[in-house]
Image 1: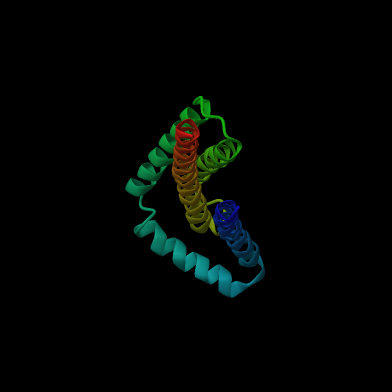
Image 2: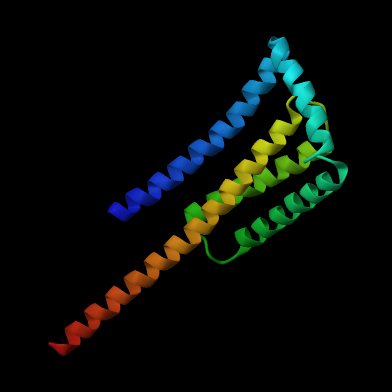
Length: 159
């Protein structure tokens, strides 16, 4: 029972981190039209980001990663392993990849455009880590349960 609580806590913390990363960007976009200081900051960061991490070469690389990640998640979704937690994580990752591709195509229509992309990247990284967590924890737990089951059967036959 304690293991399930730990797994639930990890999933809950990751979901809260995803929610707040997107919420922060939405609030930043809203404040860009309300507060002049925020608008100035976003204009400055846009100039900085356009020359550093969102240079055209890197944008093409991000586009490739979004498309490749979406295809990999689609392949995992079509895989025979159909656990509910895994399916939800894969669907959220596919949606985040699609949104990332859409934001890359609609460049500079939003004031907080670069922050939206960073938020989407954070969501995708969290979803991929959640998928890895689900895969390894469930695999480890199922192998432990299998070992316990076989040990009980051996003890039963010895009696």
